[in-house]
Length: 388
Image 1 (cartoon, rainbow, N blue to C red):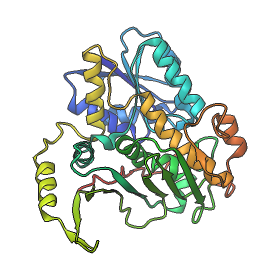
Image 2 (image 1 turned 60 degrees about the vertical axis):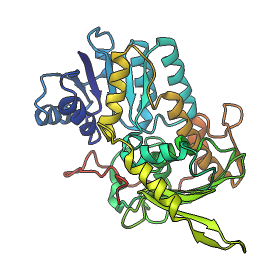
Image 3 (image 1 turned 180 degrees about the vertical axis):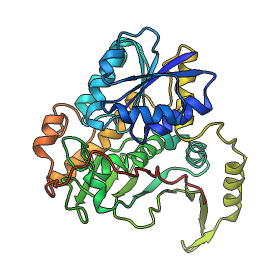
């Protein structure tokens, strides 16, 4: 039995507990809920009918030999220190996205994972959705050829009061705006499917939330060594929240939500629809097996399986988490400086590598003027499931 603690009992902790308690109750047990607000932990304890301890300070469980895995569900600026302490204490770590608020913190987390020989996994639950996994397999099959252009629409909508929550809307506490905290899902999927680019150009703005320092809209162009391009729009101002990832390849257009369109050339260079390839691709897509567990449950199953097998091999490890934050950091740096940013980013090459340098250089669109501890009703949406 794998004993688990959940650190941070805000809304996202529900997704972790749904998996631990309902999907994997025979494989793991929640032994502690940890939060500086003990009343919030008590609410989750009651909701999930847990027989567990409520702890105010995570340091109090570091020495527990009966604790094997922790889910870190706290605000991003706290992730690094909690993860490093837990890893050095011999615990496996599953940390919510974004991995941390700077690349310097990511590198400290990676070092701790290597030194402790423990799992460091970063949440990217959208990889564990059938349309995304099948799209990845379709790209990897080689049937569509090289990707020439990718279009990532990370469209969300949040009202003005969204940024009234005490830790949101500041570079110090949240670490960034929609590019970091919403598009992280889609940026993770893009780099998983297409790899890392060579350089990034970007712009960002705050169009609708004058109670936040951070951006609510950004547009980035990624350039790859093979000539391919990708564009990422990150937003919390798009009505309808229509999220998609589209790949234009040498032979076809494929996407999540799933849609396929293939063209071939007439003798004069104009297109004619290649229905035979469309049917082949669609048949292969539909024949792929569905995942047993999806979303957070899919990723937690992946982590539990690795622990059970004595392996460190998980789909989204700390190195993968760092890649995603590297792209986001490059978007922020390119937007701020107006320059094309070369990758990879290192301590010596990036203006935004550390938390201190981020805070010193990030633009402040507005001054945060409101601060509430929590909302009376705090339901959240986790984005598209990429179904038609």
